[in-house]
Image (cartoon, rainbow, N blue to C red; front, top):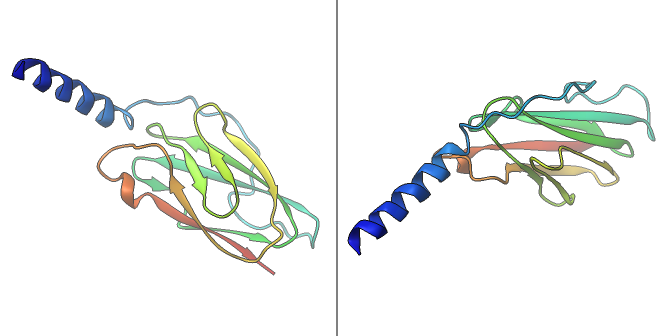
Length: 131
């Protein structure tokens, strides 16, 4: 009985640690690399979140209030998901893009929503919606 429990724990550990080891093919996307568009209110902007093991490519992404925002997730290293708290944006392996209107100023926390290993808890960034 102890051998079965140890084996089950070992298999579970392997699955948990291998989440960051899987590599997903990147999809080409035109991007503003997280920078806000120069046009005024009502313009659109794209935020490309590039995720690698335990970090995003930028600590902060800035957009202008009133813009239509297209958020895209690219898994450069490992398998990750994204949740932007307060904006109903959730991306994962089956859904890599989401659009929304940035109608409220503020700072929103971006977190990895797929357990990806030992550094998962620290995988965070910010989306800043400014006037």
